[in-house]
Structure formats: structure tokens, C-alpha cells
Length: 264
View 1: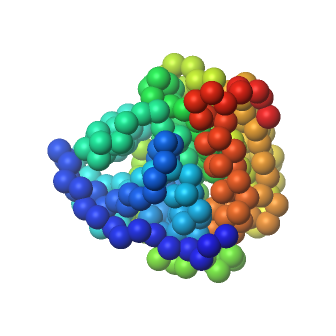
View 2: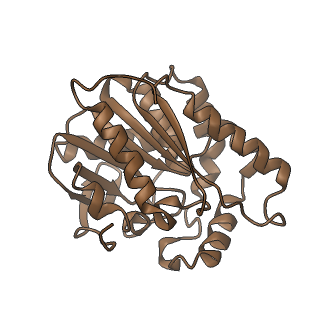
View 3: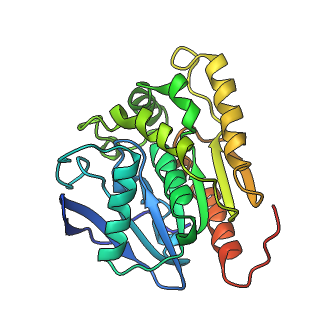
């Protein structure tokens, strides 16, 4: 595992504002990274040098995070996916894509895959939000991120405390995922944290339900697999980046043209 770093950040004007993004790497695969709620690009720094060896990698700060401009309108799942596709078009990144989504970004990746299945070659979900997690976690994710960040000594610059209320759109995004078409039969890796947060923060009953939801995510595709990052909480890409890189690599290889489509 190479020491963490990001490529030089750039700015891309879009129809509704400007986003801060990074783009690097070479190869036939195109990896599209979806940040968690309020988490900036730095959340990918520990694994970025390794995954850019797998192909072209693009990531950006959604409107209202990092140096991206504040949102001008609704930021439900459909709008986030529309912005993602605009970014990809503007950067001349052609499908198919391997989508990598963390936390709320995992919900957005699910929506992208369901609505634009013909553009998706594979999906990796990292501690991803399940549509039914909203009953358990609605309003708790920012607190969870802060607490886990302190417990795991994660640099606080990764977090921006819900500046533009991304989680205000969680219910809409979850509804949109559930109303969308079926998840495609593409290689899928789900990585869940095995280091539970304190019981005073999240009740054990809620944790049991969320564990079940994580297993359900891995069943979205017949080509799905589930890995538990035993030493990680909500940020396995920071605390166990090698495990996450292995999961991404397995999906990239399985999604390559001509690769055998065999369930893990």
C-alpha cells in the first residue's frame, strides 16, 4: 500500500455551479467514486494511489462540500446522479463504469446502477446506505462520522458537518432507489465495517438490522460478494485500505471484457 495522496484538484464549471474534482490513472477501466455525506475527496487519499493503477479514476466533491459551490436546488438522488453523468460527459469519460460508493454515496451508486444499468460494468459499496437504513440512521450519520473519526484518529479535515444538509434528501433518495429498475447483474462487492460504534451511539438492535441490510446489498446481484473489514467502522477505505483496494480490484477484473461471470 502506497502512502496516501490525491492528484491535483481541479475545478469544473457545470450548468448549476462548479465542482472540485480529481482525475488520473490510465487503463481500460473507469472508476467513479461517490463520497459519503459531508465527506470530502480526502476520504479516498489512502487508497487512491493504488486504484489509479487499475484504470482512470474520477472523484469530486458534491455541491456544498470542499471547494465545490453551494447547491442551487434540490440534491435528491436523481439530481446527484444527473450531476455525476454531466461530470462524466464533460470529462469525456465513456461508459461502462465501475462505481465505488461510500455511505450515502453508496445509495447514489445504487441509483445510478439501477437507472443506467447499460453504463455500469461493476459496483463496489463501502459501508453503503441501504434504502431502509433511513429508519435507523436518519439524522445520525454526521454524529457517527465525527465519533468514529475521533475514535480512529481520522483527520478532521475529511468531514464537513452537513453544511448544506445533504441528509435532508436521504428519504427522497431512498424512495428513488426503491422505485427504480432492478439492480444489474454485474460484479458487486460490498465491504462492511466490523468494528461497531459504541452502544450509547447506536443501539444494538439497530446494528443488527443494519448488518442484515449490508448482507442484502450483496444479494442485489448474482455476482455479489460480501467482505467484513473487522478492524474498521464506517470508513474501511481509511482504516483498512488494502482490503478495500482488493475488493475494487476484484470487481474491476471481473468486469473486464471477456472475464468469466461467475458468482463469488
